[in-house]
Length: 58
Image (cartoon, rainbow, N blue to C red; front, side):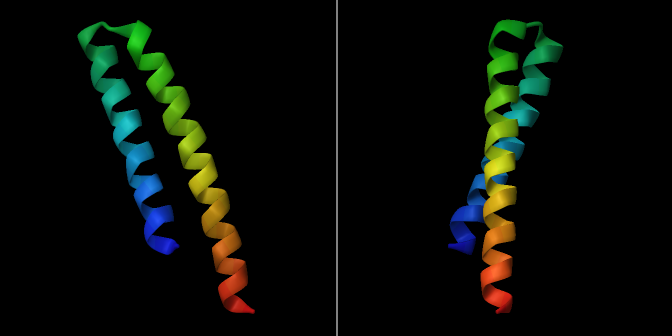
């Protein structure tokens, strides 16, 4: 489970970095959906890691 959460975190970082690169290249139409997808994925992986951490400490 932790591997899946870590992979989701890495995917969100890649999406956000790709969005920044696309912004520098001038493709705003594709960059904004990538930022939104990256932020949503980051939030979900953050929440899942908190839940996993709480369950492993009990």
